[in-house]
Image 1 (cartoon, protein in one colour):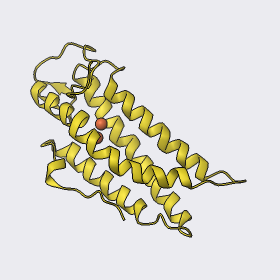
Image 2 (image 1 turned 90 degrees about the vertical axis):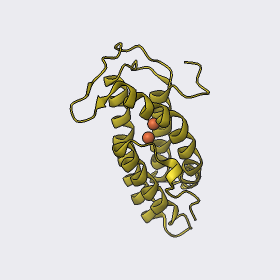
Image 3 (image 1 turned 30 degrees about the horizontal axis):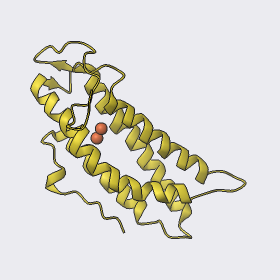
Image 4 (image 1 turned 180 degrees about the horizontal axis):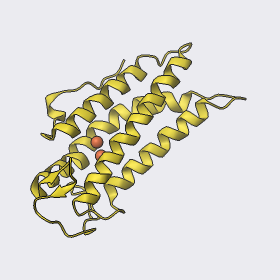
Length: 162
Ligand SMILES: [Fe+2]
Ligand SMILES: [Fe+2]
């Protein structure tokens, strides 16, 4: 059973980001509910839905970063890329026709439940604060305070040296 559920301490006071994070947690919980042997088809289908959602989720944050002064190469976007690559590789291995391997995918579902709150509370929280400070309008992609284009390479998290 998933230990990850939405709680108020995951809220970052950014409505669109918070909504996306609630959806992420729901989709992850749906995958977590079918980890038992014999439920592989459901697990893979639910994981595929999670991957598709995650592509949008990360892409949305990456776009907001680029619209608000982050360099394309910044550690938050790099972490998105790395996590998504692992998720896609796990789905690929579960899909191998000769010897499908679901173990990496099961591990990924459990690990994502550990990873997500850390990512949200550090990198996404810093991003939400930054977006607030520059006044990014997510509908238009315009900032009230013009940021220096491509200037930020760190994530703004307390453990980030960037
Ligand atoms: Fe996020
Ligand atoms: Fe993020």
